[in-house]
Length: 329
Image (tube, rainbow, N blue to C red; front, side, top):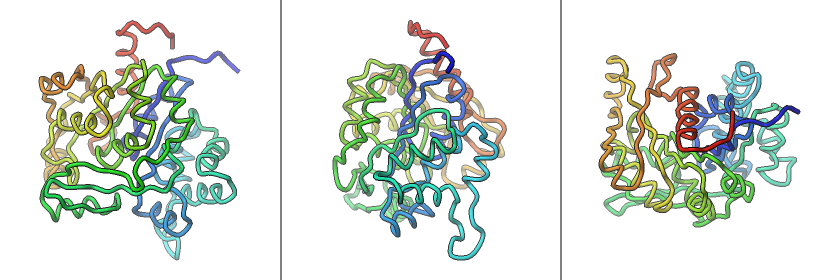
């Protein structure tokens, strides 16, 4: 094997935001770990979770697609959804992971075995092996259990999310996830759905403490847009405040924000969904203790607002170098 290069990077989150960033990070370090939420209960993942009693595979599968060596072929194979019959809408990658879970002693072992089969570049870890549910408590005191139900319930209540919690509370973190955080040089939180992809990881027992105790450079990659049914009307500082309130005051050293202008047609489409570009209120973010750095981070190859993994990776490595870290890559 060749000499390892690059800093040890841990990316924590879920959904398409995490997988987009992983596509860039896998090209700049040989020591990359993705820690992925397992609170999803909707779609094909929710069906497998209900019928087989396994953690949801969807976010794990997305990360597999991003980190597979033959990404174009593997992305097509893993993301293939059966068009009809009893499996209609189910992704092949979900079924493969479900099969491996059936012959493995634990979910994280199934993920490790699937990683070997696909020869992925990096390590993917579920944040916990426990069967957890996400509950949202709203500003008017009402609550709803189930990640997939939060969007519609929030629209019905027409008020903000006060906080989220896991059921059962304080599930134990996967030991390998805590160990990866403890030896990391860089820890990334986000991008991704604030309350349903990023924060749930911080509620797993041991994760927030490990991040706070780490000497790594801790970066929150802010979303490009607000999210309808979750964070509409919130500024970047309010996103950061929610992170700190759920996880602890020492979670973030620096917030990496997008400053690229989005096409007018794209903005119009998002406005129809009550989503707008995230307002970066720098002063309020700095009051919360985080340095703010803005870079053009959007992926211009797609017609929606998503981070370009290579741009995020370049910005992260530049910030790491600027702060006097000496590892070469």
